[in-house]
Length: 114
Image (cartoon, rainbow, N blue to C red; front, top):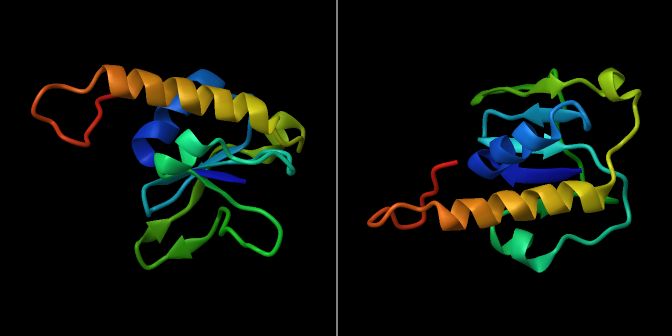
């Protein structure tokens, strides 16, 4: 499972569309279901992307928290319960990160407009 900050996750989702099960959380995180075993690239970790693996848990839909619900944007049955290839999702996230870095407006420190 990969968890990305909202702006980065939304940008990646626009490319991935229905190719991977995707959920959003009330904590402004986007979750992408991926196959295990591939380490997260350092540049994604530096951007706040998390790779969840063995021994960790992630609350999936239809979980509700005091801060709000977690819900599917692309349900697992849409992708036949097959996790996406981690390298593909990593690549899309890296591209979204590069676009984000290139489109920052002057004076908007740390904010990107995807």
